[in-house]
Length: 528
Image (cartoon, rainbow, N blue to C red; front, side, top):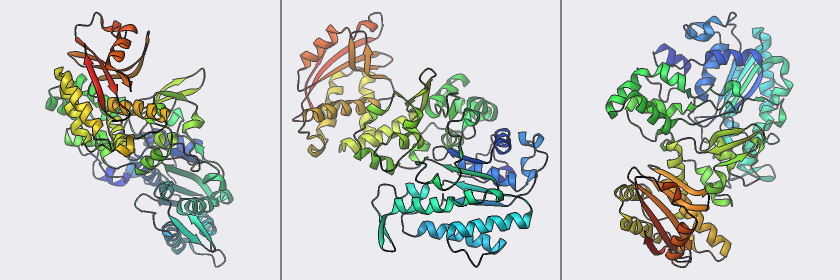
């Protein structure tokens, strides 16, 4: 089986025999029921392949669709003028790079359809080309824009300046103005347009980019098109039965066990209240090709713009994850408001995990182990700036917990915390000391994902700091800021944190510890 890893061309996939998960029934529904669409999906989720498929459909390349669902649905296969704009391959951190990219596209189209001697702006020139294409072909045009937001994301929050005439602009603000003016052509060109489709990672505030033309239908949270990108459970079992069996043999798993491991590692995305499970296609295809469960998607790029936003906001992961939100709180992103949640969600590091129909709110959390491990490690490294290598420390801690070595666990916590620079842990305000203390331990325990971990778990008697369950042991942790280990143990007993494990056959450790805000590490550690 040939896996189209890194291949975004529909024609290449079809002509060279790569596996293709058939989305064409949904594509036919899309093109026959609307005209202007916007779709937000995380990077490497198949947006470019979707755009390429639409391009060949509108060019009337019927032969590429032989054997697919759309073959029996489409009867016309009319060829239309297609204008494909792809921002993927460019870096837009240099002033003028966006204008140069757009000018290159328009100049090429003017050579084909003719330039106007009157119009000079990018938007007006594009409008002229669209009109000429309709007149010359006798059919209305199609515009496909892939990763419309990359020119903004590339420079977001970097503080890069550019001078336009007499005025100085932030480059991200200027790029929004350029795109706003360019897209405004769609409003005046209605008579020349049949279909417009824009994809991106983020949906920026409508007043900043999309205000210049008729608002697109945003299908990012539309249950009808939830599986338009990505791979569903049914598609996984239909198209990839062979590599699943091969991989199961390699790992010594049953088929059912292998499917469960794939789901835990790569599944968990939901893009509407329908809660259809969607697998990350990039990771899944890489796992099948290499027959190995690894962190492919997260390792393929670093979300530096998110790290920049998180470093400036007062919102921490512990306050963002595991909560219900109204759509307006995580769908629209406004670049002048330091709220990272919409960017985290739309970039794929959080996803919908549940829907409350009564309040029409969505629960957001990490989609799967791959994303949780990678993103928490990245945030922890940036926030704590410890000198220890995060991955090896987590492995050592997991091994110690596997063996029930509470003394070793204490050593690992103490050394890790001691390596955090004083500048990071120095907090003058009592509230900030408390916040740093809780967030530090939240990040540490979210890193330990091999086992079942409950951080800040609500029990009948109160909220326990952390419970870690392994096959042989259960650890109940309670930490006190500038307190004593005895106080922590007393709270475990008085609040009955161990009661749910009274009939459990595993060995139970109650661990009380004190954390010093002065030294930034463990002061006392007692185990029962």
